[in-house]
Image (cartoon, rainbow, N blue to C red; front, side, top):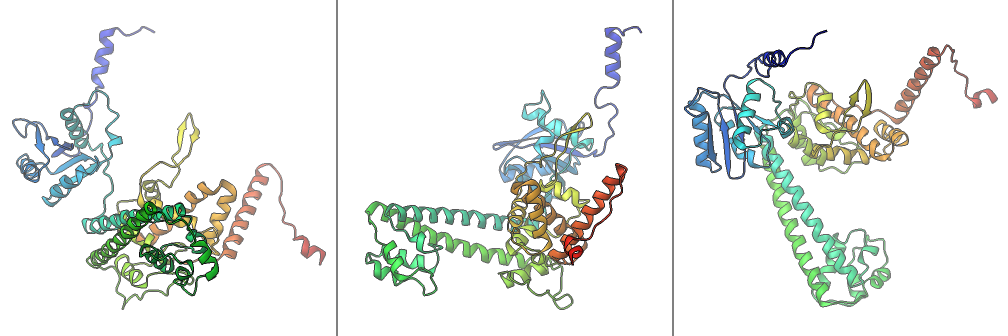
Length: 460
């Protein structure tokens, strides 16, 4: 067999060069490379004297960008999800009627030789023209409003928690063992005692009398725990933490009111007169007003699921909304959450099946809900414990969160109500499946497997 010459190999390479056989999907596509100080924009060739332009980040500059798109007859725009710089551009272009595609940087960053902003925007425009970019999921704008408020509320709660830690440290440095006799130093009793200390009260008996009558520790135990070394520097830290704690609590209350108002502005999906809200699940401490509001906005009662309360249900509606049409199947939804295995296969052999690392607040909420199922008497609790025995706690939490995500997907997409399965029914079905699996394995090896009566029945 004769080898091809160098010129013949070059001609063969030119025939299969990239771009010659690609089919154009979006003829009116543009690409944007975002930055903190400037944005580089590319439009199809021939639409303007220069098909690449630089715009600033101010609102007038963004308005000029939108007008230039209109002059160039651009209808589709693709951009990278870079920090928070994309938000203002995305919202402005979306209001102008353009179809904006937010692209994960992983789809673009591994292209060698394209490191300048001018080349990046041209490459994004070219990929979008041939339909080679997949957009990131973003819920409707009305749900993004609630999402921003809920996320800010979480940041306020984290700030409040930091102040609680400062107060705990200051108390320990003064050897005031308040955390030993009280389950929560920021409860009614703890805050009353700390306030009295900051006002100058040092008598342990008087301080102990401020504890609520339902506190399990005796007044004598509380008084002994409040004998300490009251140093000025630690009292100053305690005072700052106490004041900031109340400031954070006040802002959290204001944020919760804003969240409630934003929730009321969302479209209704269930009429309480036609579809009454089911009874509250037994044993759950739930804000009934928030539960009712979420039911009207989602159309199903997500709190009927074990370990799913109003906080997780609120996270669902703010992070993905009630419409899951962007996810073709529940597998796509779980993959987006990072809860499904990511198989790495080479030569037909699976090298790894770990889940993909993602930053997703809904995924974190579902994992937290799954970890609360360890002592549940339902089927989900039985599933978690079985996975824990088989895989260990971390992987069991992920597997149970995956199951919760599939349940939520079916409820939202098909409007199905959650039917709780009992533990006995779940264990019976699990045992029957294990028997069928053993019979198939025995048959494959040429054996017949027969069931034997339990030993207790034989003895009787």
